[in-house]
Image (cartoon, rainbow, N blue to C red; front, side):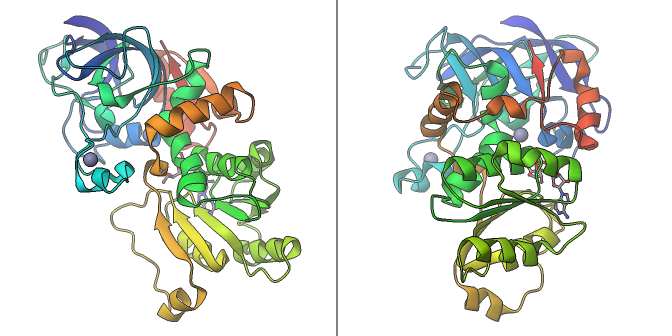
Length: 370
Ligand code: APR
Ligand code: ZN
Ligand code: ZN
């Protein structure tokens, strides 16, 4: 057991606190990781606001990279000293999805079984709920060994840590779920961190044109830097008509984009995606809707008549053991600019300010450095 500094959300809606927590030594199948960098994600704020569940106190943070400090019994996949990116889906290897060869849909993902606890205050000893089973706004955290993926130790922690959540979600929505490739067109609606990563993924895979859509001109200015060939301000023009026009210019006869990625998480933008896809095109929903949102009321004939597929992409359909090392290598070899997603490196005391900036749309990612 050791004590480290960490960021905890003690009660619903209250500002986060920097406090001391107890981190147990790793048990069987577990690892303690010395966190080097952890991105600030919407989900952390969502936990703090009680929007996910009410299992306070939460140990926030889940987009992280660091060094394995120690491992428990039976751990063979990582060893002390390894540089790892953390993931929130350690797969079981033996459920129906895993046996079907699709572990990205594993039903039995797991986390560390031992609990980290509060070490300070009247409630010292209270078990912490780590955000997405990680809890990496901490100098050290306890995770399942399967949540650690070894990557090139030369990579910058602040950049590759982002592969642990939002950036992976966007890259994977394009490459894995949407299967963007050369000869296909792609459009991305919503250019936050997730949408920009989808743009980068589409461009990396050779898709062209890559059309960026947003209502915020500041976001659109940045989109070409991530690989967008065209931008559409959907607060000014109809994005469906514009996507159709651009695609028909490049591929005569096209009636929309081959792959349209919705990275906002709202019915009206999903509907735009639905109508902006070419015949037999693919719509990928990667933005996370709220539970009260409904599929827009659409004529069933439009679903039938246009063919293609309507998909959702959860965590970019990623397989960490396949995707994290590959994407890290693309980064270190200069073909994927993960640095562009790091808007600022901040300290452990600056997380509330980072939530505010995220809310204002001022940053793609603030990354806490340890
Ligand atoms: N049309 C187009 N773009 C829109 C619209 C709209 N109607 N409404 C919002 N946007 C844009 C915003 O301007 C912003 O650039 O969508 C983007 C959303 O970006 P972020 O808030 O930074 O969110 P991000 O981290 O990219 O996540 C996107 O995926 O992980 C989920 O919860 C997350 O649902 C969110 C989505
Ligand atoms: Zn499984
Ligand atoms: Zn996240």
